[in-house]
Amino acid sequence: MPQLPMTDLTLFLPEIALLSGALCCFIASVADRSYASVWALGTLSAIAALVCSCLTLTFQGEPFAPGIYRIDLFSQFLKLGISGGLWLVQMLSRDDSSLRRFGRLELPFFLLLSGVGMMILVSATELLTLYVGLELAAYGLYISVALRRSLAIAGEAAAKYLLFGAASSAITLYGISLIYGASGTTYLASVVVDGSSLLLLTGFLLMLAGFLFKLALFPFHFWAPDLYQAAPHPVAAFVATVSKIAAVGLLARALSLIGATDAPIGEVFAVLSVASMTLGNLAALRQTDLKRLIGYSAVAQAGYVFLGFEALSTRGVAAALFYALSYGVMSHLAFVVVCAVGRSDKDPSLSDLVGLHRRAPLTAFFLLVAMFSLAGIPPTAGFFGKWLLFAAALERGQYALVLIAAINSTVALYYYLQVVRAAYVTPLPADVERPAEPAVGSQLALKTAGWISSAAMLAIGIYPAPLFELAQRAAAVVLR
Image 1 (cartoon, rainbow, N blue to C red):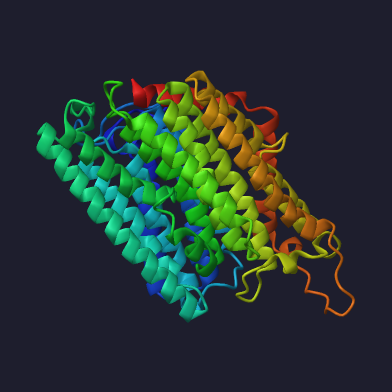
Image 2: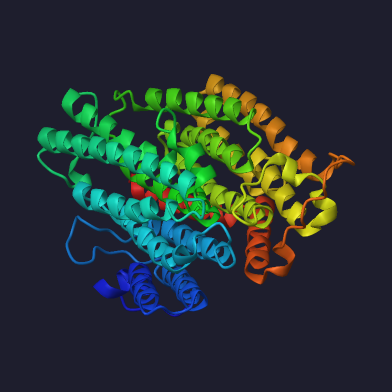
């Protein structure tokens, strides 16, 4: 691969690709171009950002001003996940019927703009810059949630998300103000959180609370199931995949602030991890709506991710980064099935999956791979991701925490297999009309997205070493 010269603009290439694409999508939508043209622009922009992230993967530097925005292996590794996830979500939106007619033109612009904000988040090394990225990432999503064809449920979900988001932003900003008051700086390199300053520790925890909203970790998870159910299918997929990758990167940056070991951060993370995985899994047991089930599953998955953060080590953060990218792929594959089964603005339920292996074998295969990976069954990426997270916690002697996580994984296995059972085992009652066949096989973009995700998930599960080695190097950069 040719090496580009390192300048401020080349360091900023992935962000420029998305910004330029967003501008082009905006102009095309205002000019009343066809949706196919706007969609193509958005998809090409995501692919361009993915290529630029690959080209700049080994770059290091601070464009524009020192100490504010850093390009390194950590930031570019996460930008690979963000741009790749954005591309796959764009593939889902090509023929989606859950969007309003005018919303189809606007969605690529908002997703690209939100992607820019997430890229800023993973490169920001100054608290106010980080906050700007956080807000830029959120604004596009607030609007995108309301683009559902069914106005009533979309409006309610968008209002809830906006209110929760505004509250989390206020808490984050207040925490940043306390950090500045205690340390006299907003530069991450100059802030060290330890047990010696109660004001600094309080500010860090408040700032962290705002970040946990993005990850949907307990007790900041209440918005997630409602948003997953009510948002247009591609928007819910974006929240479930790309925003989770950015949130994990954001939390990893926050960990770089932790100094002395007497700060009780690890214990706080352990409690949040247990509460999140337990509540998410127990709530998911009672769900019959597939999108709500995935929403509560996301709450539980956030708890697993925090096993890595609780370890407060390079191996733990690397495991969290690895699992974030793996979870993005497996969650995307689940939403391929949602988009295929949930035609005509329908939210698919477990009853809609009955007989799926006969009606649509390819869609049923995608569902099988997605559920097995979410459950952590080999040889999928989910199995190796959980194994890495458990190993990181065991290294720190957290045997009870790993035991609780293993029990939760067993509970989760039940409802994931219930989904598979509905698609492959449950017979269709004779007095019930045969459901329409999902159209994934006839939609090239959706079919391609499904094959890419399933292939990536199996490849990572069978040969995880390259991705984990890259994650370890990225984690070492941010924690040094």
